[in-house]
Image (cartoon, rainbow, N blue to C red; front, side, top):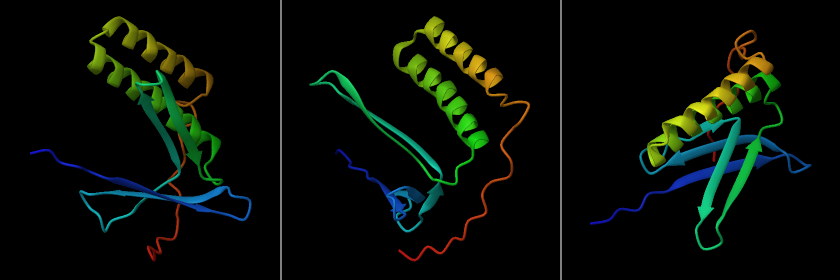
Length: 124
């Protein structure tokens, strides 16, 4: 028997339609909303042979957090690519670029500061 699962995203916008707060949840814990500051969502459309994406981040996401977010995304994307294709060489090259990015963004010299302290009002 097949199963359907949902992931939901709430984006709270300010007067200029900039994301102020983002939350997500899934069928696994439908009552629990998890706050996030950044999102990179990409889907492959086989019929059109293209990737469609939505990139969002809250207006209070700091540059050091964005740098670390992008670095982690590059590294995990390399893992995903290797798992899907078994192409270890190209995955290593992707990770090499991730390390180059980390060096240029000085991620390891300046790791992100403590997490944001947001009010968790969970009144939805």
